[in-house]
Image 1 (spheres, rainbow, N blue to C red):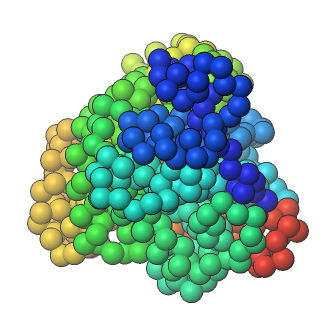
Image 2 (cartoon, helix red, strand yellow; image 1 turned 180 degrees about the horizontal axis):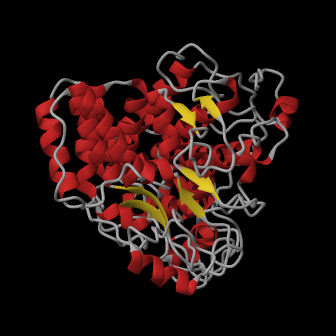
Length: 493
């Protein structure tokens, strides 16, 4: 890996801190030098000062997920990853050739191509930043709860990053434990590492996220910083890939306490203050990447790739047709017969809109300043229900699913048999979390076929592919192979 992790900048957080009212705590009035390591170590023994240093350093790391490393209009951080992977599956489709078309065609996975390079760059940059913060501020083991809560954040960032990487460059965990995953870079260093086994990568992910889930702060009103609930939600996702259902249930139950379920309507708010959001990134007029942004590609009313160019994202008609007529989530997708008023409203604003185009993301603020939502509470809610069913608590799972779906479809009745309930839970995840970056992870762990070649499909690229086929993961970037002779390449078909 090509990193600069050994270049540990002592004043990593200083610029932001100097703007605060506490600036004089860190530099004397006549100082023209950077803070020395010795001075920094002395000052950060105070947990409040440590928090200021660490939080300022984390801003840059959060910005990596927000797209600060992006170099093209399909590369805007974690939401670009969500869109690229969702579009690889069958529940979402593109209505014209535009950005993300190569992901949709499963043609963006070679060693020299943009997606495999941008993904590696983003997540290893976040890992590099987390390692520096852990090295500089949290190298000691302490029993202080405040210290542990602060340390939890960079650990969670690292665990979340490795989770995305190991799934992107290898198959799901179950059945592939001994295959090559990704290099485990755990300290600031220029040292070259080989690819660790999938099981080894997951062991590290679990260690990082467990610490964060057990020790993280409870900050339900702060959706920007990773807290206990966010770490627990991702830990539940990790255990779901491993089919460790008791731990899925355990940590999903923790995560769902961090926000409140709410029913999505067309034009709903996607600002990170919404009740059901666990984690996101605030976008303003200052940090928006405009056309190279999630609202640009998803909101049909924005003057971006969707709204101005007509590059709409649509639901697979076969999935839409399975949503009951009494389910409110049908209204998130246009149809001239099923939802005539909604169809008329949106096509009056954007005449190019057509049946099955989504309006789930039509409520973002003008100027493409809509916040990036990474995680909603509905994800762990449904994971807990899935886990309960898989552990044999089918009756309890059915009860919880009835409570969840009844808000959206008053006529719903959950199946009472385990296999039928399993299929229903999977269906509920597909329609509730449509477009949120979960479908690709789910399809991989469920080991289901991507089937766009059914009769009457509205897909424009018709493919059938297994989610554990060589064409469904990605090659390692050629630049990384050139720089690190210890790396072995994936075989991509």
